[in-house]
Length: 137
DNA sequence: GCCAACGTTGGC
DNA sequence: GCCAACGTTGGC
Image 1: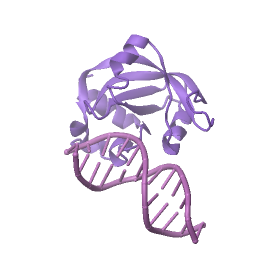
Image 2: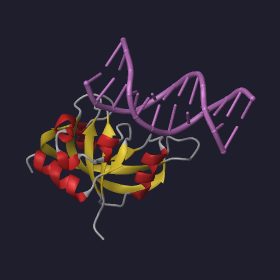
Image 3: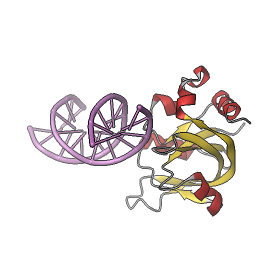
């Protein structure tokens, strides 16, 4: 079975893709939404992850991968939510902006576009390839 | 168990 | 700074 693909959002002011590159690896915690948490739980070691900058930038800027599968979120005192760990793979040659994605018919069904507030969402193989093409490979 | 009120996210 | 979308909370 092939790996799954995902997209995570982060406000660059809080934690940017550059921060992930600098850190080499990070705990992706603080997700407090059930739909997003289900996606975190479904992540497998080595899965591909698009890194999206929200609020500022508004673009997919890099590729990461799942470095540790879901475990109890250490920042959640109630023990209800999970976290994963992510590691950087590479920055995109050209960031792919939200506007570009909205203007691309092949991406019309993307969870990112259909449910704007979802902070962790699945990405289909077709969507992945389309975005990497937009990024210039 | 329903639903109104409220809070949060995130694009504009 | 505004507001749409959506999740959560709490009174009944």
